[in-house]
Amino acid sequence: MSVAISAKDVKTLRDRTGAGMMDCKNALQEADGDIDKAIELLRVKGQASAAKRGERTAAEGVVSSYIHAGSKIGVLVEVDCETDFVARTEPFQAFARDVALHVAAANPLYVSENDVDEGRREAELRVLREQAATEGKPGNVQEKIVDGRYRKWLEEVVLLNQRHVKEDEHEGKTIEELRTELAANTGENVVIRRFARFQVGEE
Image 1 (cartoon, rainbow, N blue to C red):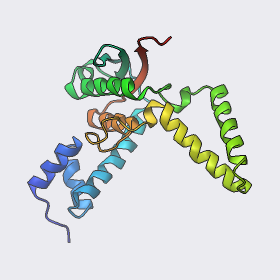
Image 2 (image 1 turned 120 degrees about the vertical axis):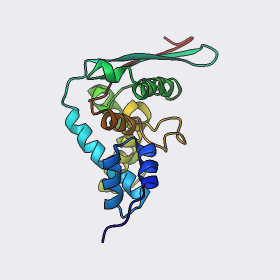
Image 3 (image 1 turned 60 degrees about the horizontal axis):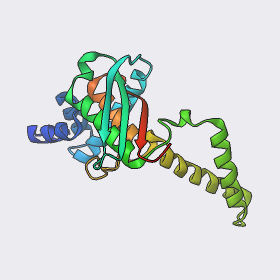
Image 4 (image 1 turned 180 degrees about the vertical axis):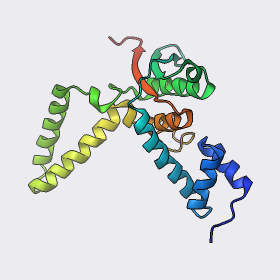
C-alpha cells in the first residue's frame, strides 16, 4: 500500500532540491514519505542524468568575479552551459559567484583530477610512499595508506573535490555535487572551465 503524500511535503522537497513537482512526488512515494531518503533518490537520479548531459557541448556561460574584503585577493571563474537562456538565470549566476568566492578562500590548484599533470601526481605519490614505508606497516596496508592520503591531497588541491567553504549553507556538499545538482535542475551540461586567482604579493 502506497503512503499518502501531502502537497506540503512535495513543496518542502521541491524547495530543498529544486526538482520538478512530479519528480518530488515520485521520490517521496518511493521513499515511503521520508524526505531525507527522497533527497538522496533525487540526487542519485540527478547525477545519472548529469553524466549523460556531460557529453553535450557547453559553449555559453559567464565569467564571474569575486574580490575579497580588503581587495587583496581576486578571482575570475568561467562557468559554461549550453544556452544563453540558462547562463542568464539567477541560479546559474549565483553558482558561478559561489565558485569564485570558494576559489578565493580555498585556493585550489586545479579544476579537476584530469588537470593534475603526471609529474606532479608522481611526485606526490613518491613522497607518500616514502612516508608510508617508514611507518613499518605491511606492503598491502602501506598501499591503502598511500591511496587514502592521495585522495585527501586531491581534496586539498582539486576544485571539484573540495567541500564548499560555506559548509552549513551547502550542507557539506563538494563543488562537483553542487555542479551536478545545477546540471540536473537546468537540464544542461554545466562545466567549470577555468579559474584565475590573484593575491597581492604573489607571483
